[in-house]
Length: 393
Image 1: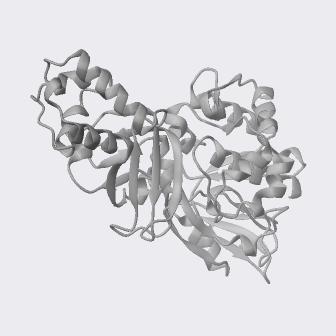
Image 2 (image 1 turned 60 degrees about the horizontal axis):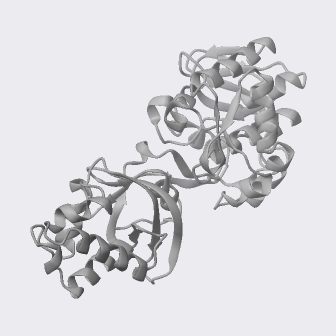
């Protein structure tokens, strides 16, 4: 939509092929239906949240940074607000408002929106000549692949863009899930299903013991393992997933040193010395977590506070500072927020997003081999790349 709108504003006659009945279907599910459309940070900080091929995006992101995205949507009549972590949302908390604003802007620019599914790009002597759809053929001087990756296929992201790009000679890096929940070994996570933790720290190490991710934030225990913003960000750092390759540690109390946490536990035990330890820990831990933590620390829940030994207390503190789980794998790619992999950026002009192989072929957004962490950065990439190529066309 951004590419079509910008191209039309620049004087091009534009047809937008949309396979769904309504445009922007994938936007409806971003930010849990609230549409986290960018992050309130400078362009260089946004680029630092792109772990793969960020240099390729430097030109596009600098020319249309997060501040410009906010001005753009405010100008379309969408008041915005900034929340924790710099996440920018519409004040209404409705993704539909963002979609409607883009749709109305497209109509004002007389972009022709056609409900059809593109199936093949047509080229003559390495130059785009048209697009073949299921319902018709559309002659054109330029074509933009903005099909997304292959996550959330019900929204239309079924990997068609990868196939069409490959048919014209482009290298497509195998797509893999990114920003995706993790499947965890054992029963501990399912036993805490539904429990959400804030201000915890997560550290992930590979088989060689090297830390590949460490950050503080929120996570959620689920029936299959772990989810939540912190876990989704961590998943982006796990490039080649096989069972046992990565281990994840949760620090339940990152604001306390082991000594401070031990003193806190000791105070609670002394204050309720005649109560069962399962009840004593209620101020320290969520109720759902207490049975799991006590079992892993080998402490019976009905042990009285005054009977807890130093050794048992040390096991409890060590567990809370380094709660270890083994990662079995990712959830299915269909559940990924974004897809890593895609059209090789080595074959695309960074300033214009035009193919180096086929004149008049352009790429925008997730179909490219770029992906970012959570926080509005992936939509920022979509807007920046769409704007860059729209101006050039």
